Length: 128
Image (cartoon, rainbow, N blue to C red):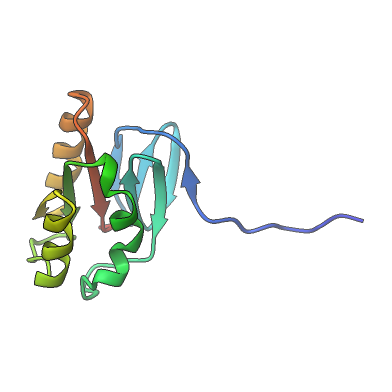
């Protein structure tokens, strides 16, 4: 007997540049994802953040778990720039990770350049 449809957490197990963004999602590695994403050293993950959400430190738990392999975290905050909460900034600084909030488009472009330079970069990108 078949197991039926199995829903798994969205995860691409590798590093990839972002080919396109907009219309509520992203394209990368010949795939597309609807919604926000985290681009981390261990891969690209679906992320439960939407534009306008509070940038609560709980949203960044997976990011904070991988700071050993990151020097920079780019945060695409949607269509406009929003500051990161002081609690998140403090946690990233304690892990020796520099963070930079910017619009999602700017974060995608910067991420691609830094990834091409083989920099230790991660990105938290809110879909627009």
